[in-house]
Length: 372
Image (cartoon, rainbow, N blue to C red; front, side, top):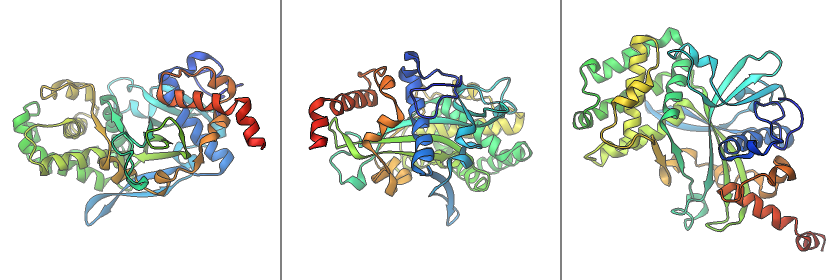
């Protein structure tokens, strides 16, 4: 709905950002990163950070750059319609029926054409475990749930394109050696096969470098250590490609193999989910992640695909703009209007920080301090 908005740049959206329900937990957590990215583009002239996969010595690696927001989303932000929790028609070809919902679908507001889809992550740094480290060693936590692995399957299938579907299957089959005979749901069996599964995932990354697609919108906010005070260098935005985000999981799985783990942890299980789902897609022409997810549990809870913090995140996201975000702490007042701030729920972390900080900044004595 077009018109007035209390969130910068989101006047064209499937949510009405003048209504309190649009500032509830799930909507706000996805909307703030988008509004931040638009504000940085439109008002500050700052392009988002872009994290993408590369090859070094024939091994998957990570590169950082900045990339114009228009190139990432497929249109100028002023021409975009922001549809939250929506199914992306670009994935329907690879799904059985309609693809499950993405966190964000970007459409042309003039033609209605669906242009891109993203998972959205809002993270804070430092974590309690890294708050006492030097600033350059402070990290954040990224929690990933199974629906994001399904979205990554869709994104990789779409990045490669239908014509290269069998290439994915050939790479997996050649690497795993008779994957049709694998006991995929047998944890002890798959521990032995895990190095091959990781190798297949790495080959999918290396073979897809030229077609990787922006996949995750990751907004960062920083605090002053463990305090309840915003860091002066506070906000920034990172987009991850599908093949860069995949490396969170493959790298963690490699560490598990090197550590001779006696069980398959969540990141390694997610790599297995991904490779098995892509192999089935190559054979059948459809991503059937729900079947794979139900089959492969290894006796553990399947509500999380992985939780990454400390060095496991820092080795990928770490850069000057992570250590020193480019947007100052008080800029949130230009991204969320006074009316919007009053609708936030202070019991949640970022909401609470914004409300308490705003209350402090609007006290008469603070205003007098600024005048003096």
